[in-house]
Amino acid sequence: MRTEVQLQGQVIGSLYLLAGIIMVVLGVQNFRYGMYPLVYTASLLSLTFFGLATYARFTYQLSNLQRANLAALCFVFLVLLWDAQTHAQQLMYWLIPLGLFAYIALPLKQAKILSIVAGLCFTAVLFHHADLLTVSLFATSYVLMIAFAGTFAMLHQSRSRTLVELAIHEPVTSAYNIRHLEDTLNKEVSRSKETERPVSILSLEVDYFEQIEEMHGIGIQQDLLKQLSETLNGMIRAGDSQYFDAQQRFYLLLPCTPEEGVLVIAERIRRTLEESTWPEVDSITVSIGANTFTPVKNSKSAQELLQGAHAALAEAHSKGNNRVILND
Image 1 (cartoon, rainbow, N blue to C red):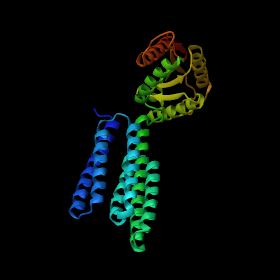
Image 2 (tube, rainbow, N blue to C red):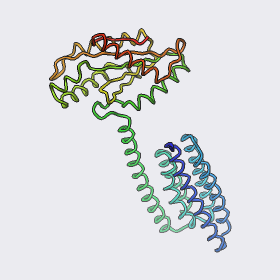
Image 3 (cartoon, helix red, strand yellow):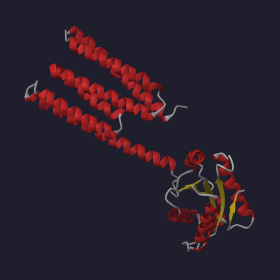
Image 4 (spheres, rainbow, N blue to C red):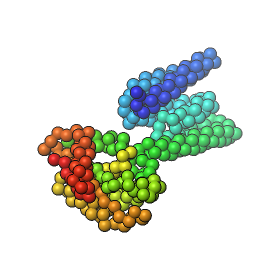
């Protein structure tokens, strides 16, 4: 299965390949008309685009690809500005598609800066080599095309962020989902091994939760989950995070928290939820399973850390609910 970076690299690589082919065609056309300096320019740019197409197809680091794109497009724009000293009116037709391409290959902020700076510089050069009407037509066309590309890029970025948020959040509680927990837990365990600081996790369930649905209906049950999620968010520290899965179970991931600390936090949560008043159901109790990864004491994996929290939660239920159990 291809990763997002590989797919993005293949798309950008295909566009670079197309740009390289277009430059080859432009080079042939300019050769036929005897415009040899532009032939050299087209050849240089085609080699640049073909090289980037190869790099984009095989890179596995998005940051490296973005840096390569920025360096390459800056180089291309500088080449065009240099040749514009003698062939400004011919090269102005090359600049517009390259300005649009920047919004595909670069992050939005970089694309804006590069396209604006390149457009202003090229317009200044063109002003000294063409009549006012030609300059006005180029400037108008360039501004309209860049504005259109910028607007489309902003909408695409906003939509992408929305899709990412939907992909990692659970719709009922708005907490992170279990898939995001697994990814984050792997990272936190790796970070814990490097920093030698513990990381803890809490697994929390409302006691007799199925009976709430039987007595009050699924609507009240979901309202309770939302209110519980909001309450938990208000109790956790900055840097902690909340998750929810399809088994109606909450998780709290607590970086830099030892066993003693996680027990204090878990007991405070249990007592606060028990003493709170909840609409429709009046009161609830929760059972909490806790587990801690301490690098100097054990070598648990992220999956084992999560399974340990599940085992502690099951033990809390078996001992009568409304309690906190730490996995040994």
